[in-house]
Image (tube, rainbow, N blue to C red):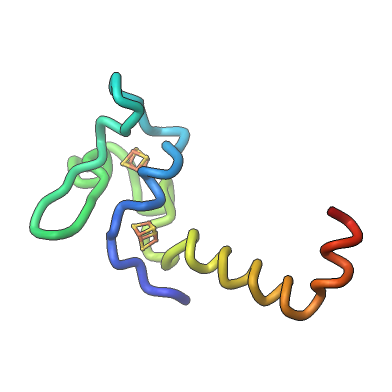
Length: 82
Ligand code: SF4
Ligand code: SF4
């Protein structure tokens, strides 16, 4: 598992189904404090860890590493099907 460092990039790059956009396109529940980001819905007890995948590590970096692994090992097929 790739540790989540609470950088907030996942929420900035795409708002989840529970989120809500402000006028600038950012999620109104994404909060920054003490050098880390957090979800205010979870902090205030409105949702559970499971609802937004807390404790599962970094989904974005895991997926990009898996994608790179796939390209390195199956690059030829990848070029063919895309
Ligand atoms: S899941 Fe990944 S992108 Fe999202 S806050 Fe954690 S480290 Fe950052
Ligand atoms: S609701 Fe929480 S987890 Fe979803 S995008 Fe907003 S801050 Fe991120």
